[in-house]
Image (cartoon, rainbow, N blue to C red; front, side, top):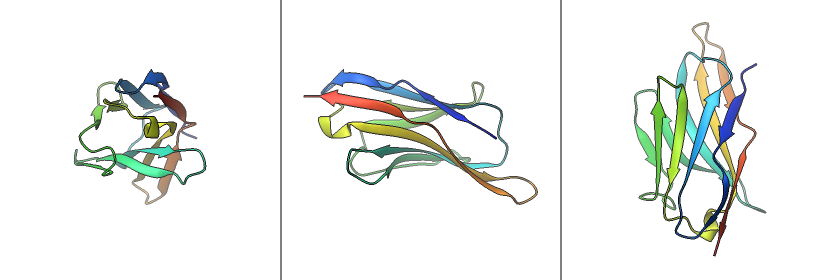
Length: 120
């Protein structure tokens, strides 16, 4: 079983920056996309940013221009750089990896989450 290890969360003042990291416990083949999600208290989990195997990215309107998703293939790590953070960015952030093996088995892995708290 693959585990996704997230790190980089913490407490930051409004206007500050954080960089989240997501790395799998072992190498994964057949990845289609990696996404970062956020779940704020009392709200549903929402997709913030996504990067495909081809390198295409897309962002939620609420974070576009402030968040950047990127990957370092050599380190097998995906990042979420967050700037100009707002109190409404507070929540648990999750990494998600979807793909399929060469045998056609599809997978959908989630990390354990990392807390981001933005104070006003």
